[in-house]
Image (cartoon, rainbow, N blue to C red):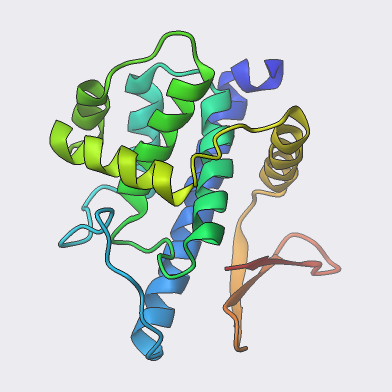
Length: 200
């Protein structure tokens, strides 16, 4: 998609993706603390939360991975598929960074003609090559090796991201209590206070 080649679009995409993943991770961290529902620990979980923000991490990956911009949309598709296929392994602050570097690497290998090896991605991600190899293997099995993203699926995810990026303005957060975590955002600038919900 030619639109993704525009640097301002990519910076907005990275900002939105990081914001989205941060909200999801925080919501799942909160859910884990207040409920007894068990969350599986996997190779993606770190012993502690990384000190680098999700946005800084995504910017680092974008800067050094040199993969096509489409890889970030496909990585988002992969993360969505992974969380649906692995419901006992929700994205949280202990695993989001490893899931990100792995999803972008797998997307680059699947989409791009030229891509770096696992050792390079491990260095970009701040992990060992051995760990990167384990993460890739676990991620592929977690996806059931379903890596193909049809043009229609890509377009649907990219359109959603585009729509959300145009709405990216200062938002107020309202947490709506329910059995399923729902985050409601209210745009302060709109008089009608239209609500948008992201189910996590």
